[in-house]
Image 1 (cartoon, helix red, strand yellow):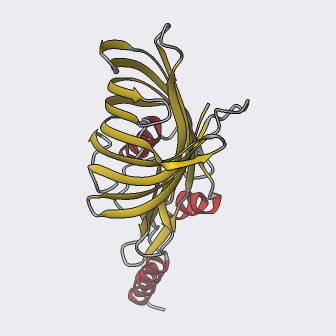
Image 2: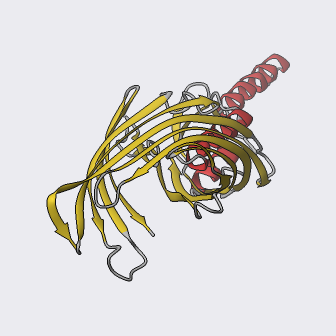
Amino acid sequence: MSVRRIQFFLLLLFFVSASSEAAPFRLRDVDPAKFVNSILALMSYSAIPDLASSSLAINNAQSGNPAISMTQFGGGFTVSKESRIYLEGAAAYSRYDPVFVATDGTDARNVPVKWTSGTLQGGVGYDFPIAKDWVIRPIFNFSVGAIFSDLKAAGTFISTATGEELDFFDGGSLTVGGLGGSMMLAYEFSEPGNNDIDFQLRYSYIHLQSAGGSKSVSGYSDSSTVNLYYRWRAPIDEWKVLNKPFRYVLEGSISHYLGDQAGVLGFDYLSSAGLGVELDSSAYKVWITRTRLVGRYMFGENVRGYSVGLACSF
């Protein structure tokens, strides 16, 4: 075989072997730092007490499955009129189902990744009376939470096929801590056996910071919410249940989201209008003195929905 033919054969073999090596898949448009900051912005919905976002689920338009779902329950109370100390607390659960796109330049594949998070929030405040039934209430808030990745297969695909060394995707976790504060203007009018009126105007701020977990990611979020809440409870004629008036409940709220929280879910505000009933069991020696069942209609920018809430007073 001539030297020229040998050179041609080697050159052809080189091109065949090069073309047989598929280009590696890589995640498209993924910045880990920005992504984690967005997750913490989502967690701030759970870290700030808010009626409008206490039960929220947004569906994935392609699959119909929830891309994100959040549930929050909690409450607050003034210990006594003498001490004026106000305490609040809440626990929240959320599910985040993002879908990434991995590509090798010609082919693209969807990579579903799912995370679950839990958040505990607390607050200590003090009531400063400014007029009859009106108080100014500053509150110190704190929050702790954790995020867990629960789809190891997706993490394996990302780390092997895309070359992205992100241990957070592969069964990772992230611990989050937060500090903040709130200022509330509250009106609380109570007429035994008749009407009760609650009005609250509240500004809340929370700074969330990753504190441990997977080494490949870290982030922070500065979020705040302005919330207006109103509730009116009144007897239904002379109807009594458990020797107490059976009441109807009207309530409404509007929340405006600021800072990193704004627009992360496609809206800056949420409103709710609710109608329900209240059962008073205070005539008996039981822990629960009032039980409320309220149906709510939720609406905001490009979002509509319904929810049912159950609340108890002790």
